[in-house]
Image (cartoon, rainbow, N blue to C red; front, side, top):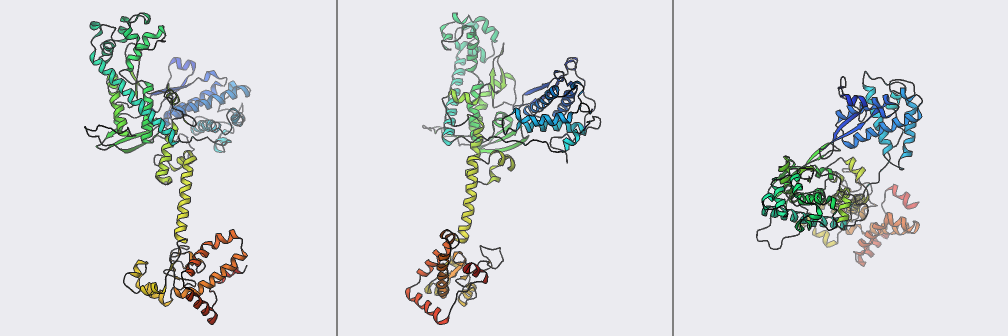
Length: 631
């Protein structure tokens, strides 16, 4: 079986030639795409290390592996970090490191490698997973080179690759979910922000519709400038050329910004303000990300990567195709939609977490910008940027964090302000809804991933609580329902049609009960081979000691002498056992047998005691039970 992460396909032929500049500095580059599909480049320069030959060998394996395995930015950066840290260790600890190579035995890289692994944890926090991760990445690169028939690896490194890594994986502190009160505050703030954003953009387009060409109607009216930007009639270079300095700008334009606007950047800030009246900027996308995560229960990267082709609207639902870059997985999920309110609905309800409504709003807001930039299909999360001379569109980036958005809107939460906790909140809610069934909760990833990342905190308490409750309920239903006690009149009424069926008995069962064929000692049993204490088809293994706790038992008037004898045995047993021990083993039987005796009249009890004395009756118990009673 190939090692995890090893390249198992055909090895490439000669490496592609590099351009002169790349070959001169020896740059190794890996081109990857992030969760939003944007290209990213991760580079490493072997010549920066004294052991440049070793660094180049490892970097070449990294470049080829990343191209074959389609790594993401995080994985590519970890490989680069592992190579860089190991090469720095070789530079400082290995003599004649300039000649170090995986294909030679001198200098000894096996000793340098084991020392590097031994020292790795000292550079990270206790329990960190990073040391084991970096060592594992380096082992994958060395193992890949071993598998290549024309790239020799000398010394003891092949043995290290096949053996133990030498480091534990470490542990992580998993995030807990938001409290219900905190999540409610976050969602309310997001809805309020979204409504304000949409009102601002509606006002901006309405004002642009009232404007005219500023070359004819004047450059001092905001409506004219908005008209020029909306219709792409004037470039920002031209608009900026016609606008005076901030200090000499007309009051109609200066009033759009705050009084403490820096004079040197006032003109550019005015341009940015005008663009924000027509299109979404990066901070505007935060509340929509919050609402869509809360409505779908998906991760931030999954909702931020959505575009128009991933969404299919139905009459009362929406179908969304999610892509998780880290797991390289895709999943289609349907969400019900709120029916459209009637036109005469005077008091609309408060906004709800409706995935269909949220995605419709985002698409409508981003269509003008996507059309202007020539982007198709329309991304849900698109922002306007302002390079000269025109407006361009780009995906949401990380310049505005979730914690900054919370702070700007005056929302304080318990614990770290991490947006991933919204995902955890969805998992907890699902755990409560599905009563702790892991197979239903872990629906968008493997059960192993759920146990490693979500089965803690409130989720773990919900799951364990439901498991305990179900187990208790099962035993209560099986053992604590107790027997059915029949009086003389009730026993005679079994002959009437329908009476036996009400107790789950057939006419044959009634006849066997009356004839004593189902007598188990202290009670009768409607089916000794369907005991809740044994396997199906097995004769009850605990009769008659547990008959008084079994739902299959029927206590007939003829069982009263044995009941009195069994009660006397329990009284003696109670004197010989500790109260806690007796209550745990025989407490329920004692309660049930007392109730069965109290249901009889004094005359019946006296007659049963006389029968015991006259006939010399004794308690009929299996031999094995006498060990406990007589011990």
